[in-house]
Amino acid sequence: MLAPEVSTYERSLASIAQIGSNPAHWKYSNFLASNPENEKNEYGTFPITINEAYSDQVGENSLKKKGPYYELYEKVKLLMLFMTWYALNVLYNVDNKIALNVTKLPWFISCIQLYIGWLFIFVYWVTGYKKVPKIFSYDLFLRNMTIQSICHIMVHYGAVISMSSTTVSFTHVIKACEPVFTAILSIILLKQYMKFNKYISLLIIVGGVICASVKEIHFTWLAFICATISNLGSSMRSIYAKKMMTQKSLIGENLNASNIYSLITIFSAVMSLPLVLIFEGKASYNFFLNYENTQTTYTYNEIMLKIFLSGIWYYLNNEVAFMCLEKPSSVPSCTPSSEGKTDRGNERSVGGCGRTSD
Image (cartoon, rainbow, N blue to C red; front, side, top):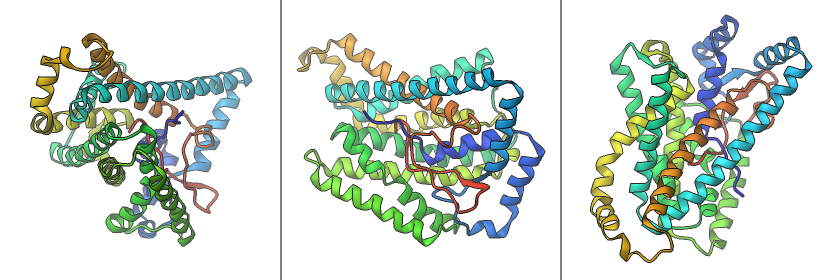
């Protein structure tokens, strides 16, 4: 079973969402943003830091004030969230792979999955479950959303196309290289560095991926290249997310982690539609028009249900991932993916090598 993993991008957004409006915490964050030395740090694969000691202390004190039963309740709730996260990840991988095997239309499937996410997004906003984002500067907003949406297209489409041409496990093996891409791009685009021993440790990941690729009987260059493109997109998305957070107060309000992901889902779905029509528009039309000639044990209604469910699992998987990461204090020690740490006791790098469904 593949453990659901979270990308560096989602970790960064979730951690910033935890900061909230507490002046003490914002003061620390502003110091990091304004400190010239922070431009060359060793804060892990993604260069956003939070005051971990402060965050953990606040979380622990809050739980103690509410009593032992509330603390137990929070731990049980977090455990249930993680179990749900794992279950959704498994459901997505299974239904997504079935849909891909039958249709052979990875571009079409990827696009549909993004549009299905709109159902949740608009229900959340219309019902008031989540506050609707308010934009102050449309110029800054569009510039940031466009580049992150392009990166998201690379992430999602690259992963799905890769999975369509090989096993799900092999795609995830290649995508384990994401921290390597993030480390390299952080040097090139942000001029931020880690300690030398951390770069050496990344070689272990590269070596493991090379060994797994050589031994993989289902190896295809298409799968390898598309998974690599997905890694590149994820790392770039992380870096541009960091840049966006430095301008968040100028861009608008209600731009928390979940809302930013929702906006990127909307933008990437619209932007990718022309590509889907170009690459698989005719093939998609012919497939559904002549489905009775398809050699499969699934009926038309069954495969349509698989496609629809894969989109539901995909969005909910990412949604629950954010809910897990926004839990204070207890999350860093139990998140099912690796997380780089600095040598300083009171600061943690927000990053990791993992992903959600992508």
